[in-house]
Image (cartoon, rainbow, N blue to C red; front, side, top):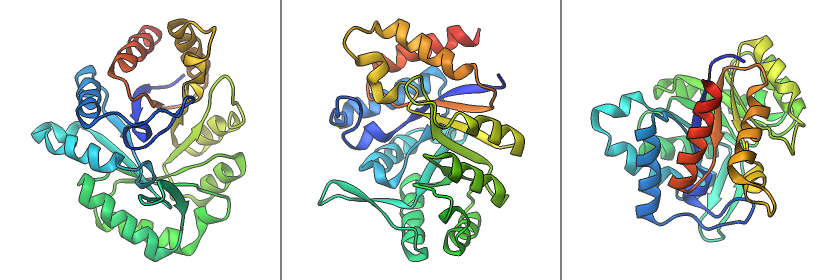
Amino acid sequence: MSAVGLGLGLLSLGRAWGYRSEPPPTEADGQHLLDTAFELGVRCYDTAPAYGSSEQRFGAFLSRLGAERSSVFVATKLGEHWDAGKQASFTDHSYDALRRSLDQSTRLLGRIDLLQVHKATAANVSAPEVLRVLEYAGTLGVRHVGVSVSDVAAAEAACDVGVYSFLQFPFNALNTTLAPAFELAARHGLQVLVNRPFAMGQLVQEEGREPTRSARESLQHILRQRFSGYVLTGTKSAKHLLETHAVFRSLQG
């Protein structure tokens, strides 16, 4: 195992999500979650336009940090969008849609450290319109670009393009499909963001499971892999974040 930190995925901050499809937290509870994460030393946060009001809420938090804002690694995405009226996401990787999305994310978040192609596929990671908007992102100060994939073929294609420095994908004890992506990332020098470490909560919420023990076993399963980057826990609860952070630190020690 290389250097791995705990990050916070912000999908559940802005829309219903998870094993039990729970609604997002109230504004006060959401800000409390973010405050708790920051106090714990969490500095990597992953959001997206497709996460409903997540970028807006996270942006409000960032605006409160003042000078400490510079210590936060802000990751967002483009390619999957949110229809507030239908309360549903949709994909559009055309240049105009991607640029509008990026401009909106920049307005909400300010500086973006990592911009990822959402719903990345083996075809679109090298599409001219995608690469063109990533070049535009550089003019806005975006420091890194990456992809969020759900299959090995997309991960392989992204590594072959040669412009991406981060690879995000789901990996947990119930879903090991992307296991080869760890070796791919290491071979090509990419950082990794592991999402869904607890299978959207199933590994800690399912009846018959002891949450703390399940969290420990789940994180151990991930930390056995060889990679550098972050494990993104997706909780909406400050209490659950505190528990996960304690388990993660005990494993890092």
